[in-house]
Image (cartoon, rainbow, N blue to C red):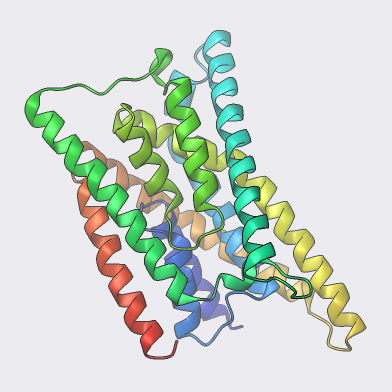
Length: 297
């Protein structure tokens, strides 16, 4: 894989990850167009490291806001810790359950079945994009109607979401993990809005959830690459781990820079009541992905 391809993927990831349009879908399509295999261990590790770059962008962007809300006092931090652990627990339960069901049904009888084998299937990414688009569109239009009617969204104390809202966000994040195209940020923020949270509180908590879960995902994919490397050595076709890691770290840096720009744009759009437009974009992107699949990509 060339340096130029890594930079392109990093920019695509950085811009799309922090917008509610499914970075994974955009990266997979970009990989397909460049002749890469999105389901390979090397590409999966690269994608996860790109996520890590945007995770650091999230921390840099939201740090001052989080200090005022989640770290303003011991009590506020305790409440935040309970909420994020609750949401992450639900994410793990739902995500792992879906992963096992898919691997035991779609891959029934297959040796060493992994859900990552589905990541290159555009015919699955397209409907996931459409589903995310519908969810974002509904939340955005409902928010627009509420703002016209003068209704206010609810939240918890200390400027964060409620226990119920955090739970729903955790469940939906679990649904997003196995499916490329079902935007994690778009689905969790929209879900929180639908159960009464403000966009701003939903956005802050959604990205805090991402920071918590990203290290675990990075660890899982690093372990997967290590196992794939061992199997490749036994098969007589070793994987160049040093090269894969070097490219992944480089991509992480570029995705960090692109992610900061995307976050500033997202925040401005949230403030101007344009959330529903991201839903329209996802629906249009779904049509493009369906077309690419029909063309043999």
